[in-house]
Length: 372
Ligand SMILES: *[C@@H]1O[C@H](CO)[C@@H](O)[C@H](O)[C@H]1NC(C)=O
Ligand SMILES: *[C@@H]1O[C@H](CO)[C@@H](O)[C@H](O)[C@H]1NC(C)=O
Ligand SMILES: *[C@@H]1O[C@H](CO)[C@@H](O)[C@H](O)[C@H]1NC(C)=O
Ligand SMILES: *[C@@H]1O[C@H](CO)[C@@H](O)[C@H](O)[C@H]1NC(C)=O
Ligand SMILES: *[C@@H]1O[C@H](CO)[C@@H](O)[C@H](O)[C@H]1NC(C)=O
Image 1 (tube, rainbow, N blue to C red):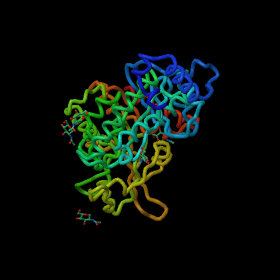
Image 2 (cartoon, rainbow, N blue to C red):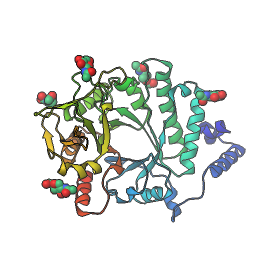
Image 3 (cartoon, rainbow, N blue to C red):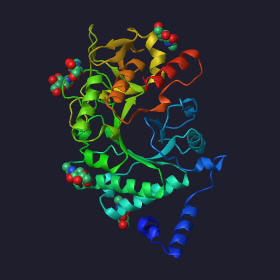
Image 4 (cartoon, rainbow, N blue to C red):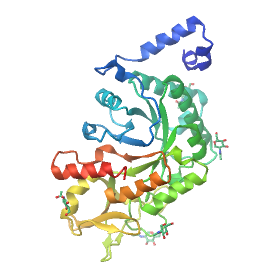
């Protein structure tokens, strides 16, 4: 059955029986349309002039997103048919999250089976594609390395064939330099899908120099990552810039007068020091704390990022690094100038969507910073 459905060749040269079987199967894999207007269950087609790609991790705060900008929502929370219908009414795609242990897709039959399950799920939920988020270690030229490129290619072919207009994307680290031991065939994967979402954050996951708190996504380091992707002949139009709507709270071993916060050595994938020494905090939480901190919001001109310092109830000093409209609009300006395909964030839910006027202003400013 899978082979029949999978075969574009079969459908084009079709004999009526096979076509009938295929139609029956299509019918059985789709549930009833959950939207008031059945037209909202049709897949979204077309390429927006600028992508605004939002990761949503669940709950209902999506109701307060700036839908005038959004082109794609990657639904990483529980499936929410209300979100699906609403996004479609705004012309925005909703895509699945795709993740699978890489060692399980070395075998081509296993890949085919995994892909068929994803296509089936997407159809059943009237979704418009898949965002493949494999953040696993892969050794260059290993069986997993080749299998991963094949997985992306075969997933893209299957989705494009089965859901017209659908979008297949792949998440990559801020740089192609085997960050966190993810040695992938980046140019092969970029060719094989619609675009890469570059996760320009967690850029201190592997620190080889001094063990001190630094920005989550320093300006220069972020831009260097894009230069490296583009210099491996990946077109700018294959890259969407991911920015963080969260920061890191570090407890300092020592905090010097000139704002150097030294950290314990917590190693990660071979590096002696890592942002694993800190704790991720959302922009919403940060904004509730910054005004009452010891330092207030400070700006690091070298990294072009804001930070602040506070003392916890046990008397320990902390330094918190984050991104705000000022740091994000600098990066967004580069994205536009460099001709990248768009921008997006991890994640849309990180803002304070309570309707107090201060929160509302902060939230609007963060959305606006995506399109300076
Ligand atoms: C791969 O597929 C085979 C059957 O083709 C199955 O027995 C096996 O469990 C699958 N392995 C994984 C890791 O999914
Ligand atoms: C990357 O993938 C492409 C497409 O499959 C292939 O042509 C190329 O040789 C691969 N590059 C490396 C270094 O493996
Ligand atoms: C951390 O590691 C560096 C060398 O990698 C070493 O010089 C330093 O003393 C270590 N610091 C702590 C607190 O263990
Ligand atoms: C924090 O201070 C800034 C600037 O002084 C102000 O605009 C903002 O409203 C304050 N935030 C809160 C939550 O009071
Ligand atoms: C950042 O990059 C610019 C342009 O390449 C360079 O002039 C500047 O010195 C860099 N700054 C730092 C702190 O590395």
